[in-house]
Length: 334
Image 1: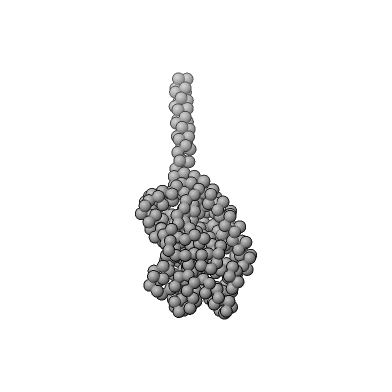
Image 2: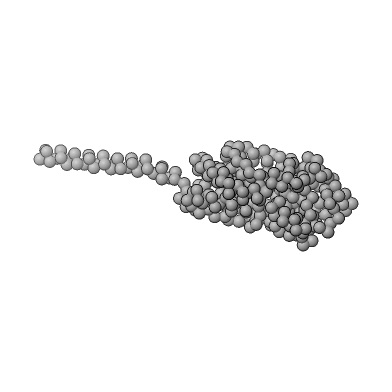
C-alpha cells in the first residue's frame, strides 16, 4: 500500500515537472515568435497623389522591400492638407512597424509652424527610420511670358505687384515655401495657388491657369525640353549632379536662395527599436542596389542614408529652420 502511494506520488511529480518544463519552453519561445517581423503585408502612407516624386519614390522602394521582407508592401496615397491627412493616419496607426510613412519637408519641417493646429506631433508621434533623398524644384514659367531669367521675372513682378500667380503641389510643400522665400528675398509679392499634386500644378502653368510654378524637376523636365514650359533655374544651393547644365536661382539673380524637398520614412512613435533598426537596414540594402539607385537618380534624387538617430536630429533642425522662414515671410495656408 505504501509502495503504491509512493509510486503515484512519483508519477504526479513527474507530470508536474513535465508541465513546468513545457511552460518554460513556451515562455522562451513566445518572445522569439513575438519579435519575428514582418508576418503580414506592410503599407506606405504617401502624402501626395500618384505621379508626384514622393509617390514615385515610394513605389520604387516598395518593390525591393517586398522581396527582402518576404511580404507585400502596398502604397496608400492619402493626399491633402499639405500631407497632414496622411500624417495623422500614420500617427494613430498601431506602433508595430507595419505602417511606413513617407516623411517630407512638409509634414516634418514646414507644417508644424505653418498650420495653427495639427492632429499629430511630428516628434512624439513618429519614430524616424531613414532620410533617403533630397530633391530641388525647378522654377518654370509659361512660354508666353516675356521673361528669360530670374532678374527679368523679378522686374516684371515689381512692375505688376500682386499679379504674378504661382502654383505648387499644395500648401506647406517646399514648392509653396520656395515662392514665399522668393517673394521675401526679391521684394516682390507672388500669389500662391495650391494644387493637390505637382503634376497638376505644372499643368496649371501650361494651361494658363497660373503664370509660374515651383515644381519637382522630374515632373517638368520633359515639358521644358518640349518647349511647353520655360525653366528659369533650380531652387537648390548647388546644381544637380544629374543635370549640371541647369543653373540655380542663386546664380541667376537671387544669391543665397536654397530650398530643397527631402524624403524619408518613419513609423508610428513607440514602435520597438529593433523593428526600427531592422527597417533602416532594409532601406539601406534596397538603395545599395544599382538598379534601384538608377531609378531614383533618374527622378532627380540626390540619395543619402543615415541612422534613425541622425534622421531624428535632422527633422528637429528642419522644424527650427522652417519656423524662422514662416515667421519671416508671413506665409499662410490658402
